[in-house]
Image (cartoon, rainbow, N blue to C red; front, top):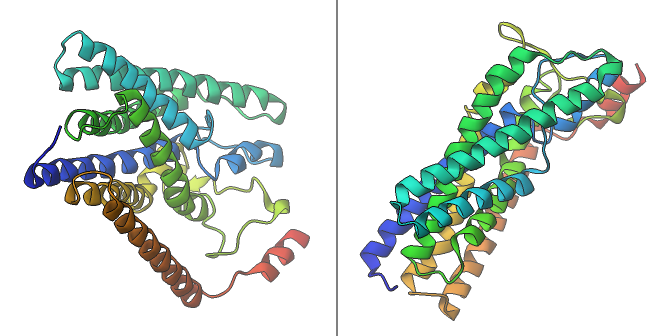
Length: 301
């Protein structure tokens, strides 16, 4: 299917908006479920004598879990589309079923992990499961809806030869990778370790010493997602939205995958690498070097 330039840019803008929402909700979901870089520290905390009220599911890495979730919803959506359901209805039902399955895996993963730590006296808080799991399902539903919708637009409006489930799988893996690369740095480095200076890292001897008290009593996963919604989630959403937008606008402009498209994409990648390097250097110059000497001192004491 060939679109004119105006319609193509409209579809691209819609895909970019959906991707921004999907990226933000994916990161916030992994924050509320502790399926991110700080997850290993949450798991180690009871063994170090630090009992907590953090949801600790980590079904798998984010790329795998969101690839699985998105392809599940997209498969259901494709089946429903074959039964002549309206696309919006089919996408909604597919995303909902995938989110419910995701919630089941989250509950069993969290309960199983806590049960395996019973020797360290870590309680299994039923209220945590009761009010955190629906939050996980809700975030995952919205992210799935956006990912499946992107795949549907690619297949129907842009004429991609790949089926909707395959496209959703690729986007699920992609948003999981971006969530790990962008959002988790903010969550792991700032929320769970506010007693550490910026850039100090974490010595092995200090593993599991997470911050467990928040603004109002004991900290929970809901506190984490509230904090991460300020920066980590939006940053991830912008990152995924830029990936989708910068990936497809050359395709729209040059009407398909041509040599001009590939050259434009290569130039974009080079520019992004250079900008990332400049940002990294600026941050290190602003906040100073890593405090390795302080880490070693804390470990010895």
